[in-house]
Image 1 (cartoon, rainbow, N blue to C red):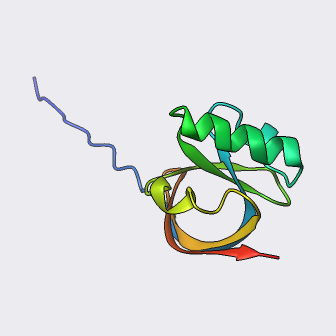
Image 2: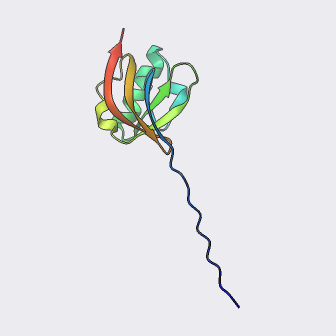
Length: 100
């Protein structure tokens, strides 16, 4: 009897991106992904209380976990433009700027 071993190779998709949207919190996700005063205050409060910051795209409302979320904590008051790398659904911020 021959023993066959098969290996499954899974390609990890990674890509660079530039996206506009909002920093929210992992508790509320897309619910706080907008510019309303209540969404901004709730995101600040939840992040202060320990929720991880996340990024929510402006057009699609897609939520990305951040691998380096501490960079986002000073950008909770306005819309942001993020340049970074997306891998396995996580976004690593290379650059983040407020959009007026």
